[in-house]
Length: 610
Image (cartoon, rainbow, N blue to C red):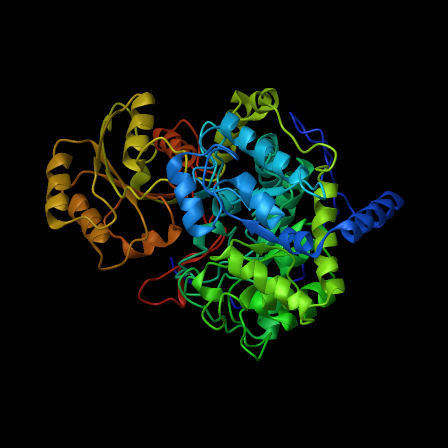
């Protein structure tokens, strides 16, 4: 059945009260503190006195959140020392802190910061020792991108959970809050106290190359509810959440990592479609908001990237939405923020626009000195600089970092990757798997009539910490559930020879499961599915990223959407295929016809069960 696409309509922003649950495990700190009470006023006065004692260089340093290579703050591997010298001009994380007085560090798996939980905790402690050894002893705010789903910097044995669009398919605020609280508890135990999540972008463009399944969905009200729930979950665990990417990156066909995207929403469309999740995050007491390197001409006719736009960051975010927390830029190494101005001007303009934290500039020495010179030369007043430093210190104090900057191995062992957390991740994942097609009631597969299963399909690079390629993970999970399953990787762009190999391997099988990944109508993945279906063997497709794949496929008997190719989602899909779990997910985005986008094949809220 075809459904007419619904028109965009004005929606009210969701509101929520800020709640704080006690942190668990090794972290003896409260959630991010609310403002306005007497205790907070006393804290503000103490922090203002701290700012007054800081040198200008220390104040400038507090603004920067920087990458650094190595598993140790003082004794990294030689290759990481070489990388640090080449890119930053220092040998170690400890030297980075001592030289530039940076206020934060961002962890990446590719920078070798996240090898295993005890190592991460030790690295965090080494960084904190370096910060507290300075002229003005200050703890650092250690951050990472742990969105879960397809973006995770800390891998197994930490608990990996469903990502945003999967949680959107579950549609449960309780699941969203619980997932964030579990994730936040583990991050806090590792010394990571700022998470660049949740994504608050409303993904209304199926062709969006950078957001997609990182968004909770296409309904602004539903996204707002889940964003607020995750803010409460993270911050109840003692981790500052970060709503991103303001003013909204959900309707673009360009990736701001490589281009400067334009979003042509009118102001009315922005208020209806993009603003509600950010309003909800602010109402929930969000600790930080991340900017987007996008141009929205209706919000700033000068067409500056939002990261550098005073009308957007000060005029809308601070003044109209009333947000007085920390504003952090997206990475300053991304091309979207570098296309119009040089790397020396970008950090200065970001501060003048209303940012507080300057994330990961490509050349730290150039950026740091540019800000220092701008203050010394009067382009940025020291009063304006102090405002940002005070916001950053206030966030650190609210997280308890001045009192409890360190973590312990015992605390890590109590909470990271526990069986209770892993079981919870499985339960949440089972609520996300979405059944879109089930012709003739093929699913669940019977072990009597469909025992011998071939698993083929795409094997994209796995998110950090997953155990294997998706085809292998699915085949292993089905085998553990009583099937005889074999895996054959055909890739995201299968060759004619690989397709022939898959067709030959399907001979004599009782069913074929095909993992699809960002399918196009004329692409080789659609050819693979059609050729397999022509053999007469029943074909089940599993969209392991975007649920839009089904619009480009034909011949399959059943289709599932998992919204990610992580182990937890694929194991849940296997249980659904095997009938050990019922599909409960509902589409959080519409799936439109490939040849006529005005026609909706499967609307928001669609999902079958059995």
